[in-house]
Image (cartoon, rainbow, N blue to C red; front, side, top):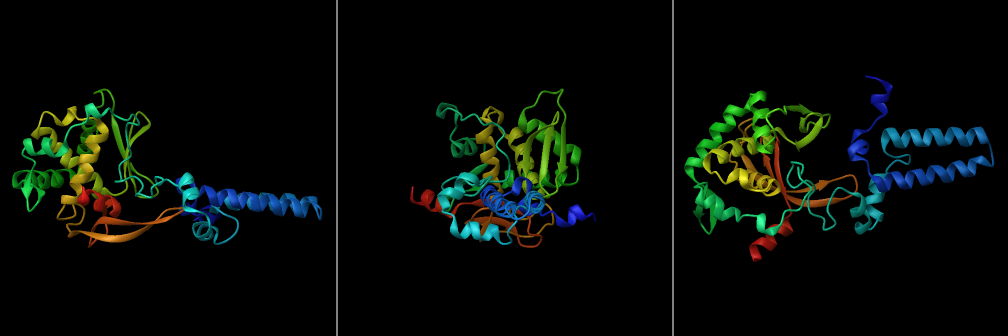
Length: 285
């Protein structure tokens, strides 16, 4: 292991970098360098290089800055820099990247419940909806087929995105164990767990063969429906363990927030995070 690797802290750098922490530490480095300038110019230059190097490699110069930032910076300010929305709801809810930044017109949206009811995918049960037995069986079968077949997973992503036949999809795992799909060098989707990836792709495979309307649904809503299906998982497609909902506190670079998480009890594979306030609001509505 290189010295660079030993010093670097990926939890505070790269995509995980806390921008407020960086700003504070750069400012402290500048103040320290100015003070040392009147003592020794070489010492001030050395301090600046060490300080900026530490911020680049570790995310901060002063130990404990991330926790101090969370404690003393106002939440509205942290929301400006964090990946979380300003209302504090979970980031990347769920784990797949939005593939189309265009906000669809309301007229282009479908009623997901009515669409899935008419397709025989869900059915009413106990003042709620459940998967039909036939869809649940086909979903489990698709999960088993996709689990160890990387080529089939790439083909399913290609179909899900509706890409031209000439484009090929590659699927890789990055340094944070996220599953990243790319086409022609551009990232087109990302899942933070293998289980979430398999659940979405298997549901897509079955839905696309269940109703002709599936691929006519706008991409943002199509992904939202796939994400919702993860809450119906009864076993983990990765290790076979029991899947259950738990209440957790999740930390980002800048803030902490409470979520209802769908997680495998055996291998801790994570499938979904939901804002408890959103669930309460939906129940009231």
